Figure 1 (tube, one colour):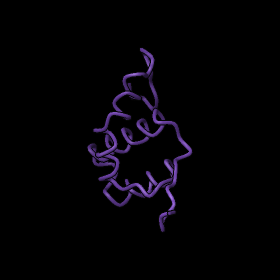
Figure 2: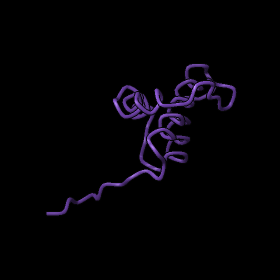
Figure 3: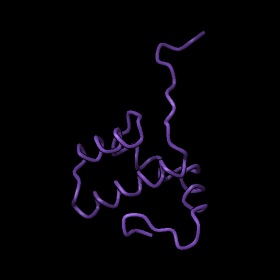
Length: 81
C-alpha cells in the first residue's frame, strides 16, 4: 500500500546536506539567523521541509557525522573549516 505522503528525497548528497546544516547552525549560534530564517534557508538549500530542529537532529545523526568526517583535510567553505 502506498502512503498518503510520498517520501521526498533531497537533491543534495549527505555531505552537502551536512555542510548546509552546519552553516545554518553556526550562523544561528552567531546571531545572524533566527529560527524562522534558518528554516527558510534550509528549505531553499536542501529542498526538503527542514526546520531548525530538523537541522540539529540531522547533524547529530550517523549520516551527517560520517559525511563531515569524510571531508578532505584542509577543507574550507565560506571561511569555515
